[in-house]
Image (cartoon, rainbow over all chains, first blue to last red):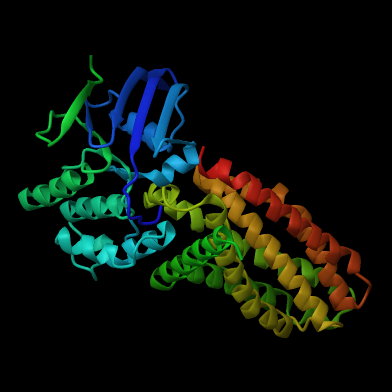
Length: 209
Length: 227
C-alpha cells in the first residue's frame, strides 16, 4: 500500500470466530470490534488462542467459522487485500538473516511501494544499525526490526502479538511512541498474556473468560 | 503499460534480485547443484568412458544427461520455498508480495540456476563422453525448453513441499509424476539432436508442457501459498 497524503480510515470487526487444530478447540466463538484510533487488547493465558486470533485477522489463517470484516475508507477488503493492509508483529515472524536491516526494509519497502527513505528513518528512530545482518541482531533488536517492518508501509491496521517481548526500556519507549503515532490515524489489536500498560486501550478481550 | 502490470513486473524483479542476493551470500543452491552435477558427471564419465563413439550407446547418452540435470536440480531448487518456511520469513513475504509475482520471481531465479547448470554441465558432458551432436541449435533449444519446464515445475513442487513436514522425500514423490512427461519429451528431443532424427514433435510437446506448467503454477500457487 503506497504512502498517501490522507491517512486511510480503518475498521475491523470479527464475529463468532472458531478455529480448532485437530480435536483441540482454540478459538470458541470470539467476537470484537475496533475502529481507527482505538486499541483492542487481547489477553489470556498461554495457548488460549491469542496468536491464532491475530493470524486469522491478518489473513494468514482461515477461521473454520465466523466472519472477519475489515473496511478501509468504507470499502470492505477481501482476505488478499487485508494482508497488505495490516502490519504484523509476531514471535513467529523473522526477516532475512542474511540481509542487513536496511536491505530487509528496502526489499519489503519495494514490494509494498513505500518511500525508499522510510526504512532508514525507521531504523534511526528505533536505534538500529543500518548495515548489520539481521542474523547478528540481539533478540531485542530483532523485535525492534519486526516493529519497523510492521509500520514500514503505514498500514491502517496493526496486529501485534506480544510486541514488547525482549525489549529493554529504551526499546519499549521507542516502540510505544511509534504505536501512539500509529493510533492517531490507524487501529491496533495487541495480544499479550499480561495486561500491558499500553496507551489508548479502548477495549479488552479476555480469551480466558 | 498499465500501472498494475508495471507494479507486477517491479515486484517480480525485486523478488528475483533478492533471491540472487541471498544465494550469492550463502551459495547454498549453487554449491549443492554444481557439486552434485559435477560428481555425477565424473562418475558417469569414469565408468563409461568416451562411449559417444559407439553407435549403440548414443541413444542412452541423452537419458544420462537429463538424469544428471534432474537430480542436480532436485538437490538445490526446493530450497527456494523451504528456506522461507524454515527461516520463518514466509509470513513477512505472505503479507508483502502478490502470489503471482512471488511465483514468477522465484521461478525466474530457478530458471537462471538451471540454465547456469546446463551451461556448465552440457559442454563438459559432451566433451567427456564424446557425445556427437548433429544439431547444436536443436540441442540448445531442447536444453532451454526442458530447463524452463524443470524450473517452473520445481518451483511449484517446492511451494507444495514447503508446507509439509516430510519435505525431503515429498519433493521426489511429487516431482516424479509432474516432471516425468517433461523428461521423456526432453530425452527424445535430445536424441533427435544427437542422431539427427526428426524430433520436432517432441520439442512442440515440451513447449506445450511448459505452457501447461506455467498456467497451472500461476493458478495453483495462490492456493498453495495462502492455505
